[in-house]
Length: 108
Picture: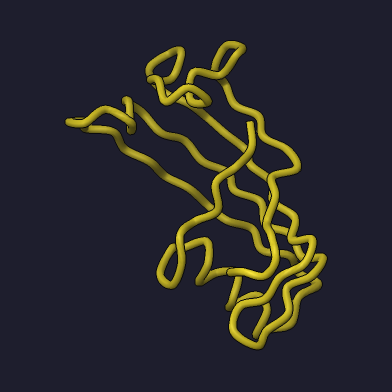
């Protein structure tokens, strides 16, 4: 999505601290419930500006998704900023579904 950036402004999960996911390890209790929040400082998707919009992800996963051979499972729900136009919301949906670009990494 260059130029621009999406940053994580908050993340919290059910693991013990420090979160093992930060170090590509299995969740502390075998599964993880998480909330991640992103804010677009400045950016675009094609010609659609995304400045100032946000996305929240609520989800859970079980198993070690970073292991070479794994049987991990993940469920996630995204809430996309209601103040965006239809085009902006569609662009954020495409980004976070990973259909057009990589899903943004979050900062721990």
